[in-house]
Image 1: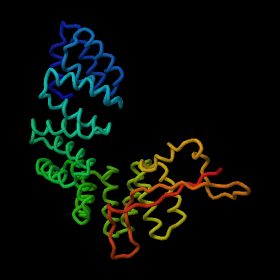
Image 2 (image 1 turned 90 degrees about the horizontal axis):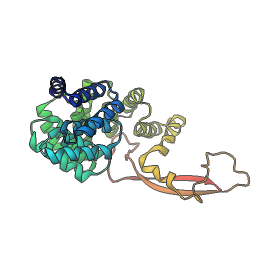
Image 3 (image 1 turned 45 degrees about the horizontal axis):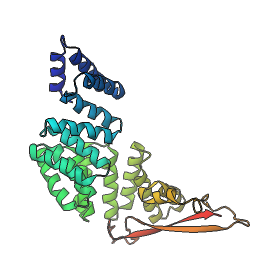
Image 4 (image 1 turned 180 degrees about the horizontal axis):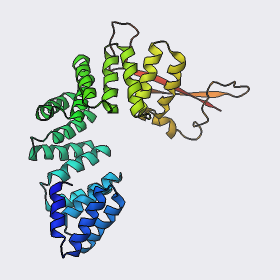
Length: 314
């Protein structure tokens, strides 16, 4: 929702009960009261089902509440009436990406780019989908276009760092990661990307410092804890490293452990004396960063897997 939409709503509300309801819903939306805004938009649509802006803003309110499938349904109604509504396409693409519907997300974001090729956020949104599809070179090209338009768009810088690191371009990735941190030192993603880039060139000490800063900003960032565990273990700090390593249970790649059948999903053994009890071992291979203890070696984000074992009491 932009200033033009708000002014139009305010101007048209005089003497029109539906317009007044819409304006009130917009005010709730701007205040972050998305449930109240949703209720208002629904009242508008009950009276005027063809109200395009109410469909769009209701989609936004639902998306802000994490109800992505519902949001997409309303975005689709907007596009039936206005197929070139670029903000709808952009937000629908983001929602589809979050749901993992990457082909549909790429199509929506791509249409937004076609309609407004000079808008950096559309290029950045499409690149984020391409990164999830492992199309790193294509994402890199789009992000360079985005940054030519808006050099200080921190999300574009961070996504370009990701694209470069996935192609083992650690030198340029580290330079851009430092730039992202300079643009916004309190952005956890920027600090985390810098930590990955530093680990890629063997700068373990600096990488750990960047991870500490990352977790000071966003303490629950699981991937940062897991990388910190690896770096601490490489440095020989085993007590701290193994403690951080417990965060592996929250990795997406390790979600299988919570989906095991009841016969296998027994209490996890944490090293205590077994006595007369027995344990079973369940293993799974999880992709990770390959690091060598050699100072001349670099880390690779590809082509390596670690075997994790889960020991369960019987």
